[in-house]
Image 1: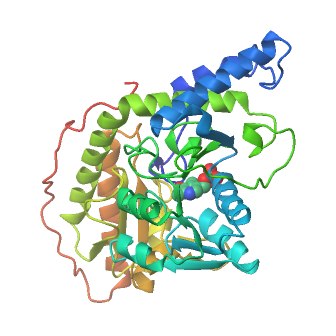
Image 2: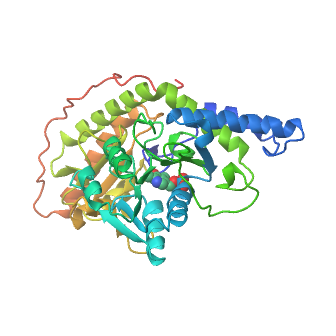
Image 3: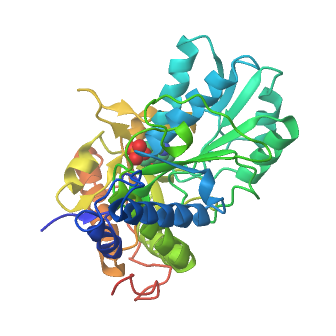
Amino acid sequence: MHPIYLDHHATTPLDPNVLEAMLPYFTQKFGNAASRTHVYGSDAEEGVEWGRSQVAFLIHAQARDIIFSSGATESDNIAIKGVAEFYQEKGNHIITTRTEHRAVLDTCHSLEKRGYLVTYLPVDPTGLVDPEEVRKAITSKTILITIMFANHEIGTLHDIPAIGKIAKETGVFFHCDATQGVGKEPLDVEAMGIDLLSMSAHKLYGPKGIGALYVRRKNPRVRLTPIIHGGGHERSIRSGTLNVPAIVGFGKASEIAQAEMDTDRQRLRCLRSVLQGRILTRLDGVRLNGHPGLRLAGNLNLSFSDIKGEALLTNLREDLAISSGSACTSAVPEPSYVLKAIGVPLELIHATIRIGLGRFNTHEEIEWAGDRIVDAVQHLRSKSLPRGPRHQTQPARCDSPSGRNCGPRMRD
Ligand SMILES: *Cc1c(COP(=O)(O)O)cnc(C)c1O
């Protein structure tokens, strides 16, 4: 049996309805969307423009302001490097936070090597950046603020409208990596004062390898120096033959996300509270990382005291597909910089799990996962501590909704 998939911040399964929408574009409608001279080209172009309008609608943008890319990593690079280079005469200062995704942080680091100045703002213990700190960091040389919508580890939702307002008042461009929030939380580039926005289809039940960058064309107009040159596709900001099936899939995923956002979000919030309740009522020494209320519905990030390093993940590996508080990028696990930034002690970081619930998880799966985590923690604590059974558990009790109150999963 496969483990239960609870790692939806890493990627999501393709929605079957998305696959169905994509299929004709691999075979019958296989044309190059730039081919103007025949119906194969215009069929493909129609698919692309339909996808563009669906993606735009999801963030309240104009379709013509959407640039397709290979994903959020590329979008972040195009946005940050593109603004930095185009406006280098105007200034060389960029403001971001310490808890951004690597795609933003590493792009900023690369610009620092080229002489740009970057301010990495701290966040509070819940993961929030203070918008007033953003305002205070702005100088006459500031050309860009880049702050994410929702954190990929702890799920914290920044006060984007407040940051957008400050950006407008001070005349600085605002880029938002909204990859974790798009399709999950309401997003409106107008109301939120966002000038550039990055996203990836595979985080919202669409295909991998396709993403988009929203680039505001009016009030104010944002200009970018491209990092990829070629045939002039996508307003010359991102040349290269368009991945038509993936764009159609991205559009379909956006259409579904828009239609199902409220029910999906409520259901995920309910499932999370079931899981959280099941774990917290039976264990002590558990730390909830991130903001208690301002967080992604499907995110639960927990640290367990009195557990050795990666033992928990190893114990759960066969049954639950979840992520840890440390990344195995090298032989030695690197403790998460996000958890460090919110002040989680090092020994707890290694005993941290990131759970990302998704659209196709069932109530039964969540209850089972909760029990499995409790069992694993109790087992490891009794093993690692000579003091004997110290964590007296309370009788299994769940304050949160039980039974099937969270509603049926989609496509059932
Ligand atoms: C996943 C993710 C990215 C990178 O997306 P790719 O599809 O890997 O390019 C960037 N930012 C955030 C916040 C993410 O969650």
